[in-house]
Every structure is written in C-alpha cells, then in structure tokens.
Image 1 (cartoon, helix red, strand yellow):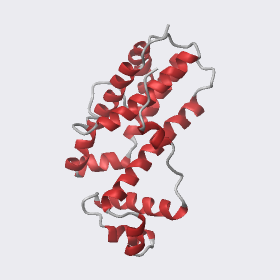
Image 2 (cartoon, one colour; image 1 turned 30 degrees about the vertical axis):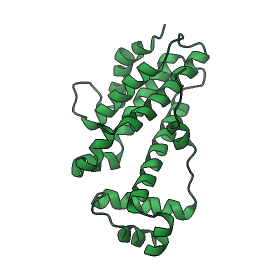
Image 3 (spheres, helix red, strand yellow; image 1 turned 180 degrees about the vertical axis):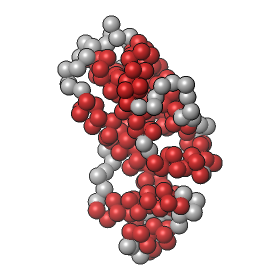
Image 4 (cartoon, one colour; image 1 turned 135 degrees about the vertical axis):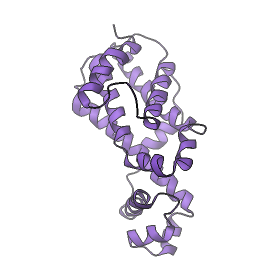
Length: 210
C-alpha cells in the first residue's frame, strides 16, 4: 500500500469549527464568491460575520491565514461529500466496479459543482492556477492518497488484485485536476448517466478489475 502523507489525515482531522469560527469562514467564503479574493478585505469579512476587526485579527492574524482556513475547509468538505456519496450510492458489499464508478462520478460532480474554484478560475486565474499547476503538488498528493486508500481497501476485501495503487491513483488525480482546469472536453461528461457510462467503459479497466 502506498505510504500516506500528512495531508490527508490533516484534512480529515480538521473541524468541525466552533460556531464563531464557522461564522467567519462562511462570511469569508461568501465574500470571495461575491468579490473574489483580491477585492475581499478583512474589513468586509468582519462586517459580514458581525465581529469587530480586532476580534477577527485575533482569530486570523492575516488575510493569508483566513484564505488558508477557507481552502482547508473546502477540501475537507469535498472529501466528506465524496465519502458520503459512496455510502449513499453503494452498499458495503458492492463489487469493485460499482464502487469505482460511483467514486469517479462523485469526484467529477464535486469538481464541477465547486463554486469557489470556478469563480476564481474565471476571474482571478493568476491566484488559483499556480496552486493547481506549478505549485499543485499538495492537491495531487491529496487526491492520490485518497484514491490509493480507496484501492487498498478494495484489495484488502479481495475485490482487486494486489498491486501498488500509487501510480494509478496519481494518474486519476492528475486527470481530475485537468478536468477542473479545462472542463471543455470530448469526453461525454455532461450528466450523471454519461459520467457513469464513461467510467465503466474507460476508468474501471485501469483498476485491473477481474
């Protein structure tokens, strides 16, 4: 099994926030969606969450710290939602093919539905693109480790053969990031049924399902 890095446990072990911190992060996220990151000031976030500027700075020493906290929560929420979709859509004893299809669909839908990523790519690409390209190693690592953990679980249940899941997991993580950056594609991913058909035809085979 691939060695898990610190990032996946770190993301999973954050939160839930206390009510006051959640209120700040909610306010910051809405301000980022309304104005973008560059145009959002700490004054605006403080106004939206009903705190004094001094109190906000006691919680987050800088705007960069606040941005990082929002990004961390967005990542945790994404992982939690993928986990929740898998639990809703497939039984614990479902075969590997069905679980892989639902995982792929959850990943694609999660990326397609992320308002903040799409907002920033459209209006402030210079801010977000480095974190998805030249400085994107943490994102790739996080996706790789999540997928490697998924494969290792199926292997432990005897549903997949024994192999190192890390290369496959990284390939799929990189594909997911590419689809987020460039959603225009000839791949038929326009709806849930198309996504699942694509996964059965082209993704499942990569996992060496027998």
